[in-house]
Length: 112
Length: 116
Image 1 (cartoon, chains in turn yellow, cyan):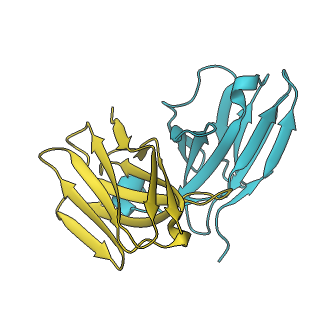
Image 2 (tube, each protein chain N blue to C red; image 1 turned 45 degrees about the horizontal axis):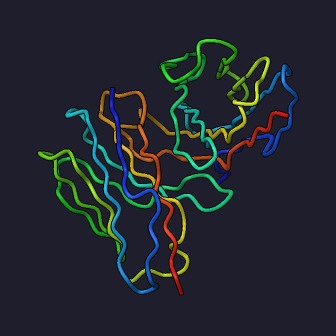
């Protein structure tokens, strides 16, 4: 089955700097890669996703890149703000899969 | 538009008791997923259900855990004879179709189980 690994587990960046979180997946059939943000005491919420027919997707300060050959995808947050502090999860799934498999999470802290 | 509703938000049980966690999916969603989150850990898939059917329970422990999604009413995750290791946050998510096809999972705010 699919296995998703995520690094780093914790990340602290200065406000205004960029943050990068990296994930790898094992199942070459995976073609859907979402990213979720979980704030303290809340459920995860989708912030951006990418499908395997594109290599990059942007939404304001957030971008995701996908390298299918290397089975690697990343989340980039630019111009970080205090409200970006949260736990971020990458995930992977395929069209035929009955579940989305999540990485272990990255706790992002933004230093003022 | 109500989101995914989970209750109770917090539940305390003594070892050996039963825990029942309920999840009402978003309106129009017939696919429900349960995930478990241990403290400082990621989301582990437990079970995927459609109305009246368990589609994938590969992440569910073989003993003491069961799930259902009846034709009427919420999905229920039931844990019998709870042990301290069951203490975790249990999240329910719903989607209008197969998650890998339709995309986004909509999560509830979780039920936090504490076993004394």
